[in-house]
Amino acid sequence: MIDSKSFLAIITARGGSRRLPRKNILNLGGRAMISWTIEAALKSKYIDHVIVSTDDQEISDISKECNADVPFIRPIELATDSATSVDVVLHSIEELENNNKYYDYVILLQPTSPFRNAKNIDDSIDLLISKRSDAVISVCESSHSPLWCNTIPDTGDLSKFMDISILNKRSQELKKYFCLNGAIYLCNIKKLRQEKTFFLSKNCMAYKMNKKQSIDIDDEYDFTYAKALLSMDSNFE
Image 1 (tube, helix red, strand yellow):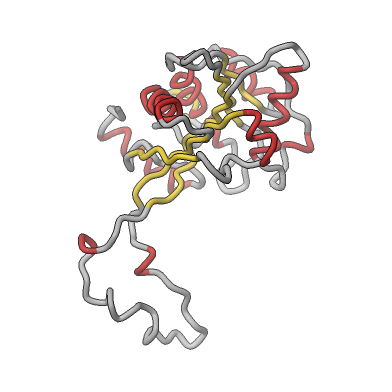
Image 2: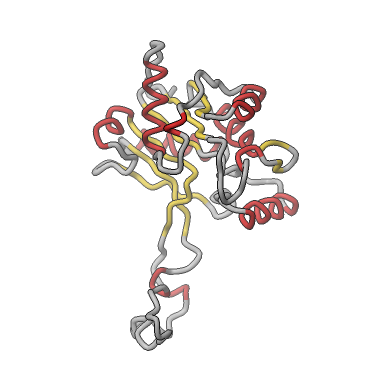
């Protein structure tokens, strides 16, 4: 708790995954991938309650072993590819409120961002409070400027691919661009219910993270890359 406000952390982990089967509990650094996120949330000095929303019994069992709360099993209709994260989060909040557990803010932590740590979580909450904002979403600097990107016609012609004004510029001369990294979504619960999105129409701030902490594991390549980084450097502070 901070500034007399309570914080609920929801870790979303469904059992199905097409591109990387059972990814949430794959062995990463000698433990289930979801355990990295659970540990980070439990180490936060501000989070009051850490729960895992899952439709999968094995994920539930592993989460409980890691000391996370699994107060319910997620309904099947909220474990499909079409179910949104907001739907899952709002369902979790309602389930807890049905048991007289209420919070001011919710922070969505996806287990596919295993190198996001407790300091990142606490820093994002500090940012929320200091800026008096209603939402904070994590980002990282884009590896490639979108100014160097475009669609390509069927002919493959590149003559109009880039604006002539940036054609011969070095990357250092271009403006910095940032992209969502999927690691932290923090929001005032009342506002989330009103707008049905973490990207609030106002008072929504960006929390910048470095590239290592921003790794988002979606497929086999991402997982292999994360394991390689971990083998070279286990320090992700």
